[in-house]
Amino acid sequence: VKASKSLSFSLQAKMSRPVQARRLQGIDKNIWVEFVKLAATYSKVNLGQGFPDFPAPDFLTEAFMRALGGGNHMLHQYTRAFGHPPLVKVLAQFFEKLLGRDLDPMTNVLVTVGAYQALFCCFQALVDEGDEVIIIEPFFDCYEPMVKMAGGTPVFVPLRPNPPEDGRLMSSADWQLDPAELASKFSERTKAIVLNSPNNPLGKVFSRGELGLIAELCVKHDVLCISDEVYEWLVYDGKQHIRIASLQGMWDRTVIIGSAGKTFSATGWKVGWVVGPNRLLQHLRTVHQNSVYHCATIAQEAVAQGFQRELRLYGKPESYFVQLPKELQQKRDWLVQSLDGVGMKPIIPEGTFFLVADISQFKSDVPDVPNSDEPYDYRFVKWMVKNKGLAAIPLSAFYSEAHKNNYTSFIRFCFAKEEATLKAANDILQKWKQEKTSS
Ligand code: PMP
Image (cartoon, rainbow, N blue to C red; front, side):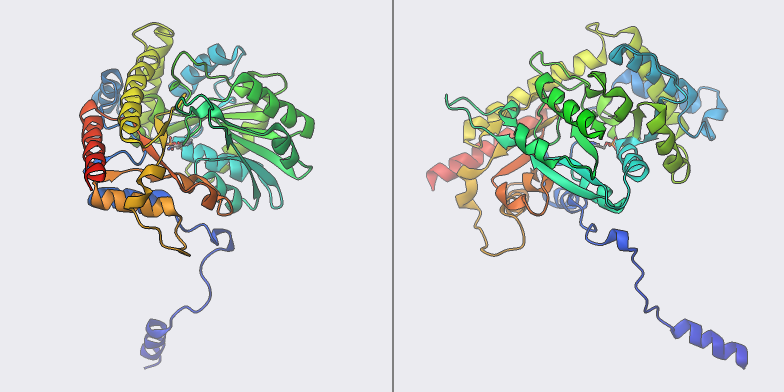
């Protein structure tokens, strides 16, 4: 009788204590969860989330197939925690070339579950309660919650648009930091700055002058630089991607983050990496070994083979890192033409596979709701995907809460898409424009 009494008690008892850890407060919303679902439900043409709809290169998928069934059954087992040896070796060789310095594959490279986990390791390993982290707006949205989860305080500094006076289309290069404003954000509480060049969502490729300014401030205030370079190969019009770690005084205080997802058009593989000095990476390894421990061996093996190929073909026309940006530049130009043709003014990106466009001329189609909690560009994108079947991402998703409402006239498109997808997007925009002019 006693036993059954206590059993019925335990079945009825509801938990009343709060279950959510304090560090999760205020970071439960996620733009991707919401807009990916919306696109899956309503869109006919999805230029929203950043992923290619064309296949990854044959040499990469063939390497994966070989790793899967090629006779080395040990590739189905655990590998080294901090990176599969062939992958860290070739990454070290590759980055030695790019940075012009010797690298130790075992201590200067860490393989992570995509660039996402690389970022998570950085913030957890390097940011303490009370530390400030400078984030340049607009920014890849996860930086803010990740800083907060580590107990840090994000401090935002905007790229300010300077519209050209000669009537030409705006470029991502027209969005610039105000040097005095940037300098004013550094203090003795600043632990790190997050740099993302080429930048998602604008496609801005920071110039040597801009990077020099950031580097100078980092050295002056003894601040770390978390340099998210996942779009390092996607730069256009002969522009050059400059690695801030190669500037004076920066190697020792910089972690470089990369992603095979973007590099080899295989976002689903979730293979990323960090390259940097051991004095920083040793702490990232502590986070890594106490969280995911290591990433899928077969994917790492295939990415290693992809990099070995690229090392052999470095700078040659057959290199994927030469071919991919060429193809993407053409796709960028198609989308620029489509958008410009209908009056959804594009900001021409210097890099990445994203493009931001001004929706001002289309606002009359989508009524605003005064005093709504939702920024106007969110409403616009939701309306567009439901009524026109075209998915994009609102630009204000890449701004902090305090600054969102200053940037509600823009939306972001991804142009890493098949020609047919971009044509279908063009058809939707053309039809929309015709309906507007005839009504
Ligand atoms: N950083 C930036 C700037 C990104 O755009 C992305 C992906 N959209 C990531 C990091 C995450 O990359 P991964 O898919 O390799 O985790």
